[in-house]
Length: 111
Image (cartoon, rainbow, N blue to C red; front, side):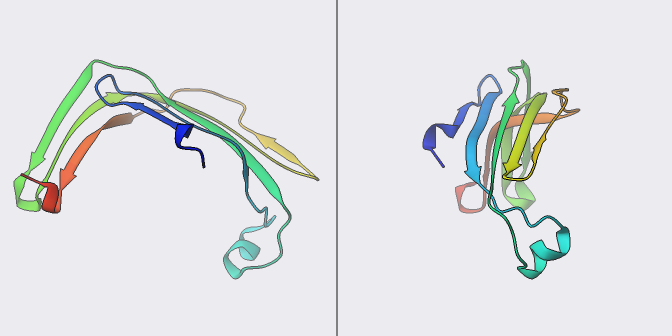
């Protein structure tokens, strides 16, 4: 995956994660996928976009050594996949009910 696939601005909450033509085997059914069954070659492409927002929140829970600063926002996702036999894609770009972008620190990075 290309390092330019991800763009993040934690201060505004805006982020984009986009991948095009990622090789992905299509197992055609769940049973084959968990048992290592046969598959056919496929590719997927997707774009997830978090919208900028001014809804900022800070959280801290010292007993578990965790803190974070997040921007609450909404996100949209489009997705498509194809094989030589079929094509699949999302039909909607409706916002998610809840999304967030931010920083967190925990464990040895907690101060």
